Image (cartoon, rainbow, N blue to C red; front, side, top):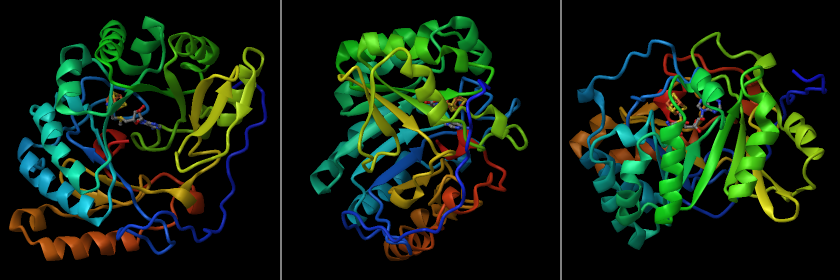
Length: 343
Ligand code: SAM
Ligand code: SF4
């Protein structure tokens, strides 16, 4: 901690919010446009803020097939989803992901606007060209440090393949953003340096406040570096202008009038009022909130091909979406951590 005042958000009442209309709307008037799909819980990294030290992987038989996923995506696009993001675990560890992206592109004729991926980039050098050819629109890449030692202490893996993956994505022309989770005492001393590095490469960087979604009892409020602390550190080095908040979960700042920096401040300034996201786990559970204690299982209905029940079940689950972290501000009580729900 750097001695600056840290204020975690105080619970507030949910206002009624409406945005562009879809059939996926909750009791607070929040329409859903974005879907995140966890393709696998498996990951070659061991980021301490994300997963237990000794993860128990799902059995392969319990993971949705691409056929089931395509059926689900078709329904969701029909109901108004415009943006699908593939995540994990590590999505590049799922065999067949390139073909799946290729197949998803057919939904662009029916309202889907973007197909994105969030990856640790370890295998990206190998896959970047194929992903670009398959129709991936953009990539978010996790990069918690540009120092091999810090990087290894946070992820338990080497940095170099990740930097090579980033270079390759830029080379083949996939637009990228970088995600950095800040953990006090781990990488918060590198905020300025990482920003400078991303600034020089002109790659948008997003700092993410550390959320209580890892293994139970691991997260502590003292480990969170909040938006105001980040800005305070950067102020001495950049001219900074805050931008008007849009639907994006990140607050955007302009640095030196040209560079875009994002901060996702779930903890200090929750954005639940404008949340337009849904999540599907690798086993086919629909989570309407990252902080929900349970999801709605859809696999049986997908296997029965019962489209009418599926649509009703999905719309009902979305309608009952709770206010979110903004209302109760505590870690969810559930078995799965971030690597299984998909971030
Ligand atoms: N393996 C991929 C990656 O790391 O980019 C995709 C899955 S990961 C769960 C998705 C995102 O969640 C990453 O950007 C990661 O940094 C973020 N994340 C994981 N645990 C988090 C936590 N406890 N708080 C905030 N962000 C977290
Ligand atoms: Fe793996 Fe991504 Fe979680 Fe790190 S953040 S352990 S790379 S899923």
